[in-house]
Image (cartoon, rainbow, N blue to C red; front, side, top):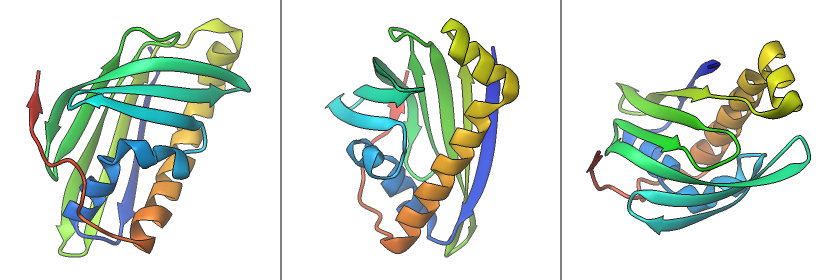
Length: 150
């Protein structure tokens, strides 16, 4: 199972970095492959993404969430099973390190080829850069602040 780990430092307080990440329905505004996200409940989101020109839908379940620290999830009912965690580390009052780790099982020829040549890592790196630009342009600590522990 391929694993992608990417890190970026953002020039905002940890509460703002975490807050932007937990506003899932805003992801399509800065994550290129995400078409739509619907927050079903505190632990469940329905996603529509476009990968290699193909639209896919899946349900993600948050398995762990702690304000200003981490959000972890799993997907078992989509075409591509995956799990991930995003962690937030306070570097200073105005700087946060964000690390995304995604484990995924590619399905189909294009995904297996993409995994072999590292396309997923490049996409995540670009998504994190887009996230950085978004959160630094309008930092706010609003977002879901509840705890989830599976």
